[in-house]
Amino acid sequence: MKYCPLCRSELSKTSVAEDNSQERPRLVCSSPDCAYTFWNNPTPVVAAIIEYEGQVMLVHHVAWPPKALALVSGFLEANEHPDDAVKREIKEETALDTEALSFIGHYTFVEQNQILLVYEAKCSGTIVLNEELDRYKLLAEEKVLPWPIGTGPAVRDWLQRVK
Image (cartoon, rainbow, N blue to C red):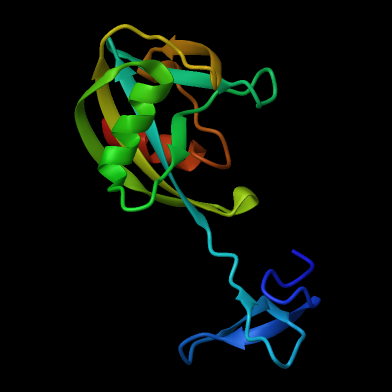
């Protein structure tokens, strides 16, 4: 952001103290008549390590690089519980039904300014991908390798639990 969405004045980087804690750099409106601060809070995202017919499902999103595979994921909607959101995303993207769900943990994805809420989901049904995904891969648990960013650390933690 370069300009204030309220008054159109330029935004400037300023350190802002939050609740008497450490100061953080924020974009603040340069107009003395406007008190707008762009907080740039992370966006909540849910993701699932899907266990399907004894294997782990990884998916490829149409917008990703060709070789990239990862977890089914999506944005948390307003007033939606994360448990419901992850079940909804699984159903929307794969048509699978979630039979069991357990929370793995929360992770920061700094590169995308997201907070990830990652689950393990045991699913059943027939896989039908929606328009967001163009392929999937089913892997034996021992063939799954974590990746360094995004949902990869959650995969690492999950693998440590199941071994």
